[in-house]
Amino acid sequence: MAAPLTLPGFVNAHSHAFQRRLRGRSEGGDFWAWREEMLREAERQTPDSVRTEYAATYREMRSAGYTAVGEFHYLGYEEAVAAVEAAAEAEIELVLLLTAYGRGGLPRFRQDSAAAYLAQVESLRARGVRVGLAPHSVRACPLDWLEEIGRYASAEGLPLHVHADEQPREIEECLAEHGVRPIELLDRAGCLGTRTTIVHATHASDAELDLLGEAGARVCVCPTTEANLGDGFAPVEALRHRGLGLCIGSDSNVRIDPLEELRELEGVARRVSGRRNVVPVDALLGIGAAEGAASLGLDSWPDTAVDLDHPSLRGVEPRDVLSALVLGCAADVFV
Image (cartoon, rainbow, N blue to C red; front, side, top):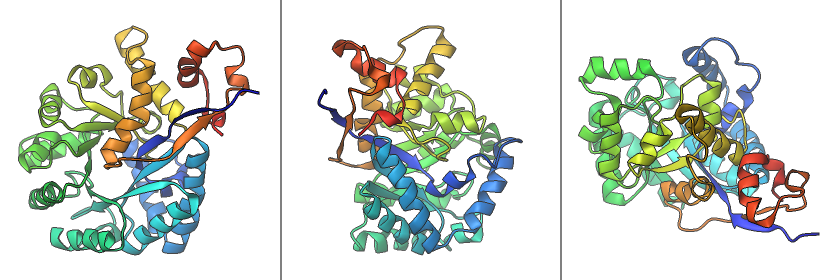
């Protein structure tokens, strides 16, 4: 029997754990139809349900090789505390990406002002919670909110995560309101920097990607969710060409499997380019682990271990194990 292979744990840089309950019952329509079902599920959440369901979901992540998670949380303050407790129970490292929501969505998502949002952030920090700033999107946050949050993140040296360019309608609405595209608006607001992670960037323009490159920002791609919601294809080669750091997230948690996220990321790049090995395996493993940790501001996080006797790795030569792991295994290979 071979000894397990130890690897840096995978880091799930973007999760909405409550959305795990939507799998299998929200098919049909488009992203916006799915969003209505998501809002109904969000409205049903309580601190008790979050504590119970998140612990179960985080245990699934742990079993799947994830050892750290960034929870992009917009269900309310008490529910945020419950999420922290759930992560402790499941023994997964958590960075609570507390979401700022100034308009739209549900009343429970929203704060009265950017100052009220930052007061919630300060309260969580006082409890010893690792937090990141998370203006939900340019849809949800007015420009003055983005400016205030950007200043705070910079002054405090905290991660800043924000959804941007996931859907064409989002871009159209931003152009109508501000005359610029979402990432251009984030740049104007002072939200781009080395601690910034743009979630999705599926429909980002070349000029927007250039802005991210100049700022040293990262992009979190969520391939299984982006496929499930019909978002489109991540511009993998364009991101890599600009030297942008990439990380992965399970997002809606329709699937919890870091290998599947990485395989889909590379698969998208192959289908678009017509070439193989667009992102080398060692780079994919870095995207799955170290880049996610850097996105969340983590200096250390637990390792994971691969069962080298797993049937998926039967007959694989030692030199090919990492390639076979990423391109041919599922999350049940972890022990």
